[in-house]
Image 1 (cartoon, protein in one colour):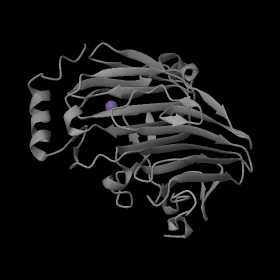
Image 2 (cartoon, rainbow, N blue to C red; image 1 turned 120 degrees about the vertical axis):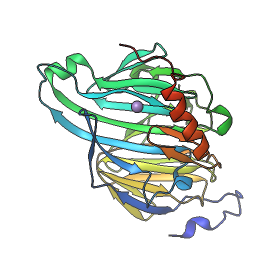
Image 3 (cartoon, helix red, strand yellow; image 1 turned 60 degrees about the vertical axis):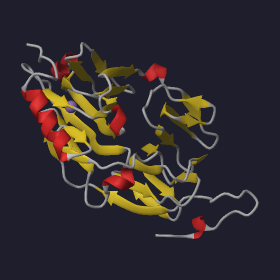
Length: 304
Ligand code: MN
């Protein structure tokens, strides 16, 4: 889809508002371990890697009620990652995380965990014990953010970003933007990223508007987790992902009802991507090496 957005503004020398390239709805769900029922929006046929780079994967778990669990755990046990970062957002519920680099923490409502797997890590992701025992609603998302080739060997790292760390910007027409990464208005997100990334958690009240500048070269998308949001001439509803064309230097949204969405953008990493299971590398040989390194203990020991 192309529209007026490609017309240059002669006064500003700017491109104008981006058009919507496509809207995607994911209708299939799968379980990650026994704790997270998610829909994988990408990678997928409709959202090829080069259109969503530097993001590699998006698993979105809409609000889901869990019964109290008398014994045991819900989630996914020790598994490796290499070559990218995992970013976990929770809106409801609580996720307990632990890795073999010595980091541990709980991702509660409004919190974000930004973990650099880099050269290799093992971690586990479970419902936090108190939440599991009491039961309740889980609402979360996990993103995989690619690393440039030169940073795939980065040391494992961990940014526990609590709700209180995330600046909030009130919108004049009703609503609020939480700035997790990148800049919005006068605020700057606390996340340290290897490549330029914008990550905004957005609430818009009915008739609320959101408009901001973004480099036209940055890939941009938004997932509407609740409500009905207009972008250009398109409308996205709960569960729909908007992919923006790279044809403008402004993003415009308008809410047709009270809405919540996650906005993601970033400078694409223009390198080959080979993903195999929990590894994201640049070549098949590097994937083989990752498997060998796991088998020979180079990702470090897995705690008992
Ligand atoms: Mn994982």
